[in-house]
Image (cartoon, rainbow, N blue to C red; front, side, top):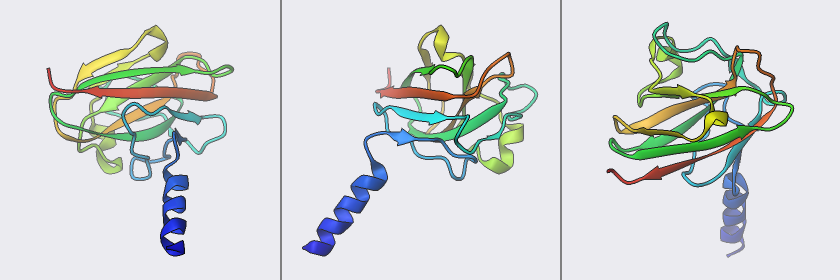
Length: 156
């Protein structure tokens, strides 16, 4: 019983109520839980270089953190988030299922937007683990803390 209780406690501590800090790579990116706030701080966390995606992909970042999200084709996705002062002008890019570190340079973002402009909404076009990229854009942005929540609704 003591071993079970210790294992349960360790699992709860590892998962925690909210994910803090994205990954420096897609391979190390945490898996998002819909409806649970995630956060990071690009001024303190390990970040990746912001030159990502293909030339056809919208978005331009200085530093990024990666997150992953399991979706089913047709899922309705809603992302609400904000950069927290002193962070400024953060962007979010969402890449299709199958995007990995090795093919990211050829990937095209499904959506790329600024959460400060309002919620980001889209419909998942494919099933699998999608990649979310977040960080200060290359448009006069400043590193710092951020937080966001992804909500996933059923197919329309």
